[in-house]
Length: 365
Image (cartoon, rainbow, N blue to C red; front, side, top):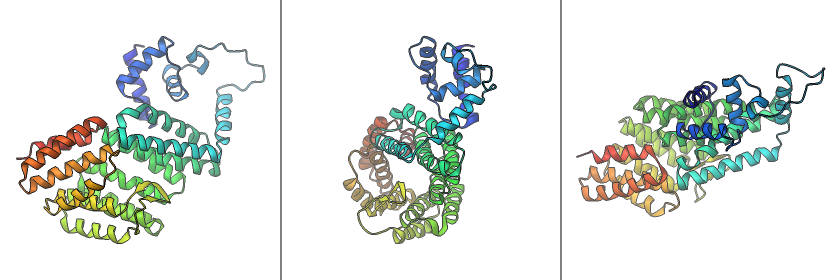
């Protein structure tokens, strides 16, 4: 089998099993390094290679195999039981370690962009999927599934930002599956709300609005006030994209009514949700800019003054919103300046999503 064929086979296996793998260029490097003993084959990729090449783990890694005792189990039962035993030993502290790693990757993503951490994210997801696959009883599965939900939604948003829309969709499906396993309706509603953005980016804003509204209905009274506000704000933005101004304003009013008072941004019950009054003002400015409302400018400049300077991707999005708001007011010089800043920031993070929007705004008369 040629190196190129093996790379394509790994990609096909990953799509079939709904697992994350590195980019094509990285896989080509990995295959070459595996062949030349310059890189160890980790467990994530070993599982794929065993299935593709039809080899045992020992054959794959070139290890000497001791003769089996006469009563040893055959046909892979030893390996299966070892994996089940390993999953049983996943402790509460280990699950917390998984969640801490997701949080670290989320911080790195905000500050540097997804492109710089794709391999770390892939390996992290693979480890969590492995732990959930071989966990037997619900008491073990639920906490691992909750950790997998948070990691999958982060990986999905990163994929969407990088322009990998099918990967984003599959990761959101994985997040929804894991949320159901975890019996976590808040996690499920959040995953559905973010997945609606894939539809919005794909040019189906009506379907996106329907999905985020379904997420609200599915969560019902089990959602925290901050998550309710987040979902209403997401609905407002998607309604703006769908050209539904009345629905947009109504959804934003609902978001403002639900949001708890104070500067606290993080939801105690939903670690991946950050939303306070300042964030919501920025979100309102974004929705108004999409509607072509010249009242967006004041909200957006207020948000730009308050944004954390280390949040590079958020700044790029704000600059795009300001450019769009200035174009509505025929203030082309200001729009051009914000687009220039947005382009520089988008290149730093490798955000294909922002670069596409910058290109569209640049083409506007």
